[in-house]
Length: 395
Image (cartoon, rainbow, N blue to C red; front, side, top):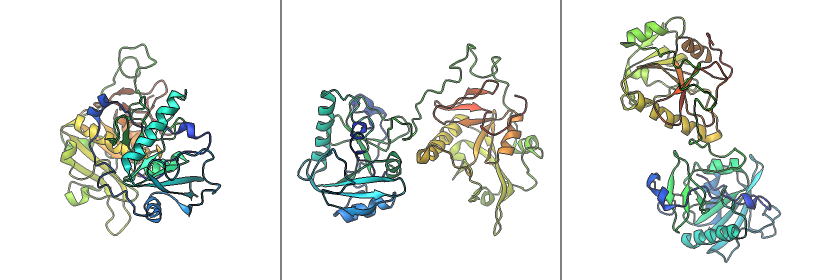
């Protein structure tokens, strides 16, 4: 969660939005985490220290405290002497072509109360959307307001939190949500944006049958074509090898299973039993001193709902950076009681022909007619054989 959320100069002030629901009724589903006003580490004794903290997450060059600096917004957010602000500065984010405004303050509650009153005043004057897309990120004793959404996204990975006080704002599931020091405001790591370039909203409706008339959840209208199953790892290996997954080199050794490569990263990390997996194997050449090649993982699933729940969380975490999944991270393709992890599009194409389906939890996903889109075991995800650029035989 980084220091990049300030007012985007002039007209951008209107998009100064608060990204968390301020209603106490929603607090029950909040994720309990340490508040940055406590012992989060997002604190600094001086403006220089605050800059150093921000630089761990985003570009921040040429710091200035000159009140006439041309990089400051024309419409003032707040000033020294207000909201307990003791010092103001501005630096440039060369990477995202924006600015980051810093506010050092002596009283966190006073700062939050000042911002809340500003939001309420704007709403009362007719600007009901003010604060919905907040870029105000706060720490223990300083706040930042980056002018660029991408900067705010980078800072949201730090211990800074987005301060939101618009009563109509909300924090989607999957994000941290904390109580602010004043009633009606919340702290979060969710960066809202009216341009669609903020944090992904994992609550975006993903109705597989949204435009269809069939009562079945998938395509074609006849419903599911069925999913493959296997009684053992040996049967799973026989199912996918050799035409789909090359298991010439095959191992169930724990050391081999723990192998990760810069080119091949599994979906399941750590103890696979905590993911609902029983037996597990790796196909390919882990490499050792050499570069790994053709790594794919085979899984016998004891608890499909647990597996999909944890895979969804991992996928959402990956999406938070830039709304895109890393190419080197494997995709999870599931059967009835089996799964295969692969980052090779050609391997996945073959698995689709065997009726495996990919667990897709990306917001707003849709597939063209003729592809399978079926309900997953967890909300917010679907099972599908559609991937842009990956051919699927039989469709």
